[in-house]
Image (tube, rainbow, N blue to C red; front, side):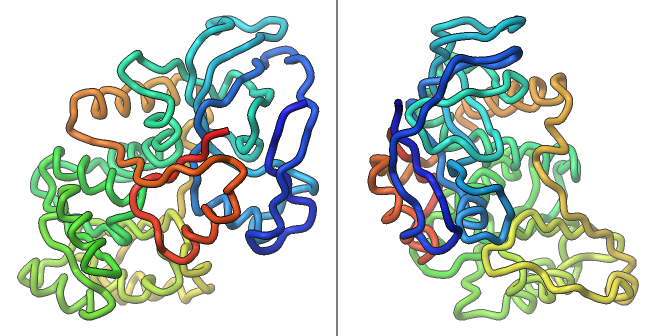
Length: 323
């Protein structure tokens, strides 16, 4: 038996219960992993609250890092003792778990468990956003909402390293300083400024090639007004709530815009894609171009407090749980 955070009835942070669960032996294509660090993400709150559906009871968590303690039949390329990082829908808030090897990647020695747990989901998300959904290049102008958040800081740093002009938004002066330190060339305090007007001012009316929006409902309408004709709107999260159904004719009216709602698991569905994406992420982190800011660390038995802090916008960078 191991300790895990279980949700029996979706609800607020108090709906999470730390209890004993049985893990068992790995089956074909599986490994048993002893988690050493677990990443906390906004998507965890969507599952916990019932916005994203899951059969109850379920163990929360979408990214972690640890070491393999046992391998199942037919497993190739992994062995007991290997250090791995992974992102996998649900099951991560646990001391140990079974994991399909299709989600696992070996960690280089230079990447610690905490760093990996703080970047597998967020870092791979940033990789596909910057390198596949839209191939950011020198001279591009990008707008990153929630630039002091976990994905936001990685987008700012990596976008800067690629030669783009990065505009970030933040909700407080403290978070604005964090975004600036992460590589945002301009930071807009959306609590004090109209971010659409400031984007127009910063760009001299040329607007942005792409907007990365992990906020959702509160920023959607304004985001479209920040994009140049034929530019791209990317909605990759909904921290303020889901975007309401909208008239697709808006995209025509705003300048024949493109819009997409991608998900990481589509991009890593092929093993070769996951390996290539992870290799690029590890390389950019090991080089120092992107630093993973693990700013909050909680023991697993304080997961309720961790969720409360996250939902009250009290976190910056990555938050990690230690089982």
